Length: 158
Ligand code: FES
Image (cartoon, rainbow, N blue to C red):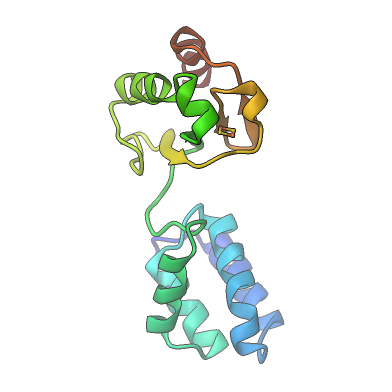
């Protein structure tokens, strides 16, 4: 692996893969989760290492990665903002909330700010429709959003 990945994290991934050696295909998804947990996304070097150690063609791994929404092939921000665009949120103004965030951060859904602080995503129902409109930032849910509330929350994270 190249120096794009820090030595410590590279070693953790290699150790993990060594402990799952011989499991082949069944170890693939957990290995991708492990890599994303370590690096925040799936760098090419990590995928090559997984391919080599689990003896799975890289082309197959790329297919799995692009199939599962959870996995990201690009570096992501420290704060992952997921704005719900499900029906309940949408009718209660989720479009305005998303526009406000796009405005403040200067990015579109699927993009990351150049300082790697924020990644913006639009998502389907987050299963807390009673709080609509809703967004999640990392693991935390923010409900009954207004554009003013969103500005305050974002300021607090900068
Ligand atoms: S529609 Fe947004 S949480 Fe359900």
